[in-house]
Length: 96
Image (tube, rainbow, N blue to C red):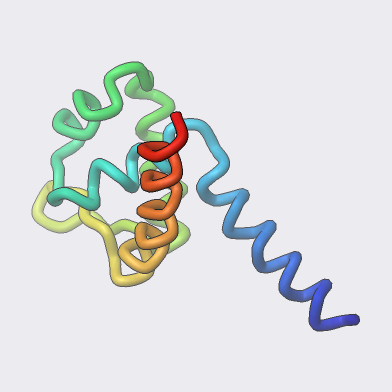
């Protein structure tokens, strides 16, 4: 039974990462190519620059993205998480 609780906590943690508004969309945008801040701002155009800055800082701290030569890019960990987001995209395409 304790293994189930650990699994639930791990799941809950990952959901908390992507559950914040705009985070999933930021990760999806970066799945296509590395982007500068202004490119990302256009990709998630309804997100304010203040919130975008906050989300990028959180994603950097989690190790899901990195900043190289003024471009934000997915890390290996971010790319792995993006595979799960591919499933959400497929669900959306099929059902919405």
